[in-house]
Each structure stands twice: as structure tokens, then as C-alpha cells.
Length: 340
Ligand code: ADP
Ligand code: MG
Image 1 (cartoon, protein in one colour):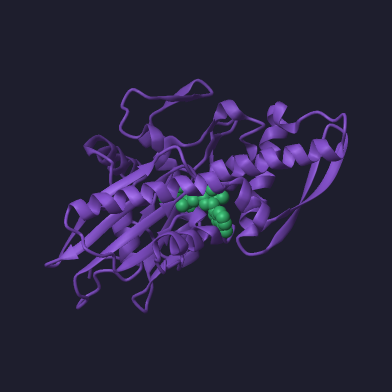
Image 2 (cartoon, protein in one colour; image 1 turned 135 degrees about the vertical axis):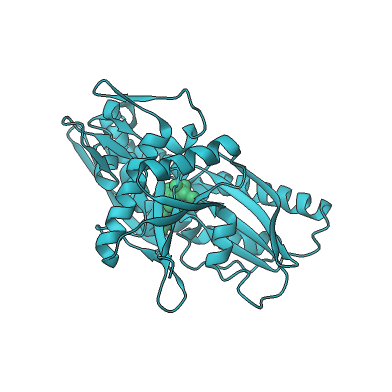
């Protein structure tokens, strides 16, 4: 019998590993911090040991020269190098460290070796980027069975194209940390194809964090007259942006949250409501709606008559405003299950 195959989402800001469980259902394997996703951030510490994930992300502000983030944006650029402690790393080499960390955590959680994998890539990735991704897997000592388009993998996770299912057209809305991808996929005559794809590779959850950090900075200065702007200092900015990201995630499940901002001898406890957060970030969401409209138009031009299902993926699609807006704008009933 062939060994089990694991599915890896090697993301721009966060990565994720999954498998098909004993009941035939796709399931995310949590990392050793019990989180579904692991930051795609690598820290090269003084001993040249690589630290991947939350610890690396947290230390980014203390040690920015030795921390690599957003390496996915460099995949396919064979000239690009990251230098840490005098040693050069290519994009596939850094990515392989992320893949190794994911595989190692999954092995510990599942109790069996992770060898055979499929790795997902954006639908727009070309040959060079796909080759670089496969190479990253090989550097990590993994057997890369296939490279799969992210929206296609997402659709599979939602049960698309299961045996016996009829022809279907799905819209995959993927809002991650640093990218937005919107894709129409169809299954027709047992063949899956990408009908149309669009997006913005500089739009993602980090922009929502920035909006909230700016808002927190204004409120902080309002409550502590005479204090400096935490955003003017790199340490303060990192701290505020990371508090903003935490608060944003909390607001996906609650109507309001408190953020404690401490900077240069001043402190303020700031309450932010979901309504306020949605208001200060509405133009960002609006941009995804416009791109959605564009991809629907492109699909229509290619004779797609209707969208059967709308699937939400990517961590930022957990923000309730996403599904609400897609419903009010297009009359869709978006599905949101395990978007990681
Ligand atoms: P990638 O862009 O690398 O594919 P993800 O799809 O995991 O990564 O998206 C990461 C983004 O999702 C980050 O900006 C993160 O803050 C955001 N995110 C994760 N969980 C939530 C949540 N509960 N509510 C809002 N945003 C979230
Ligand atoms: Mg992603």
C-alpha cells in the first residue's frame, strides 16, 4: 500500500499541513503550539540554527537582519539570496526550513513519518515558481508527489469533485495575510479547470492590521497627550502591529475587545468594537469586492452561467464582514468551514 500523502499549504505569511483522516475527511494537523497555522517566518539565531514559526515572528523586531519573512514572494527568482551571519540562502532553501518544521510537528502529532506530500501554489504561479516549490520540498527531504493549485486544493477540502458529484462551478475567495486571490474553478466531464483568476498580491490581513494599528496609535495619543507615536519607533511599531493582529482575530469572534498600549512611559487601555474595526478597514474589503466582480465578469465571458458554490479560504476570511459583504453584494451564501 502506498504511504499516506500529506497536503502542505506553503503560504506567504502562514503555512499549514493536513491529511485525510481515518474517516476520509480532510483535517488540519495542528503544530506543537496547538495552532492550525505556523508563521512562514525563519529566524537564524547566533549559532546559525533556524527557528521557524511563532518564535521567529516574535523575534523579528529584535533581530530583523536575521529574520526572513514573505519568502514566497521570491520563489522563482533564482538570483535572490537572503544573508544571515554571512551565509547565503536561496528562496527554496529558506522555504525548505519551513516545510521541515511543518513535517516535524506533524510527525510528532500523528506519530508516523511524513514523507510523501503535495504542496499547493497560487493558480498564477508559472513554471519557475512551481519548480522552486518542488525543490524546496526536495531540500526538506520530502517526496513531492505533486504541486497543486491552491484554489483547487481548497475546493477539494470543501468536498468538491468527490466521486459521483455532478458538474459544478465554484468561486474560491482566498484572503490571506499578504495576498488576495479570487478564482473560478469548474468541474466538467470529470476535468477540473481554472476558468478565471484575479487578485492583488499586496492585499491581505497585514493591511487590516496596519489600519487597526493606526487607529490604536491615534487613540493612544489622544488619551496620553504629549506621548510619542509608537509607530515612529520600530520596536513600538512592531509591538503595536502585533497587538493589532491579535485584536483583529479576537474581533472575528467577539463584538469588542480591549487593547493595552504601553509606550515610552505611557499606557492606555483602548476598547475597539467590531463595528469600528469594520469601518476603518472598509475600503480594503471593498477592493476584494471589486476584484470579485472582475473575476465573475471574466468567467461570464468564458460562458460560465452560474456559480454553484462560494468557498471562503485563507485566515482573513474568518472576519465576519467578508461573508456578510459577499452576501449583500452578490446574493451569495458563502461557505466558511476550516478555511486554513
Ligand atoms: P497566507 O496568506 O500565508 O496564505 P493565511 O491564509 O493563514 O496565510 O492568512 C493569514 C492571515 O489571516 C493573517 O493576517 C492572520 O492575522 C489572519 N487571521 C487568522 N485568523 C484570523 C481570525 N480569526 N480573524 C481574522 N483574521 C485572521
Ligand atoms: Mg494562503
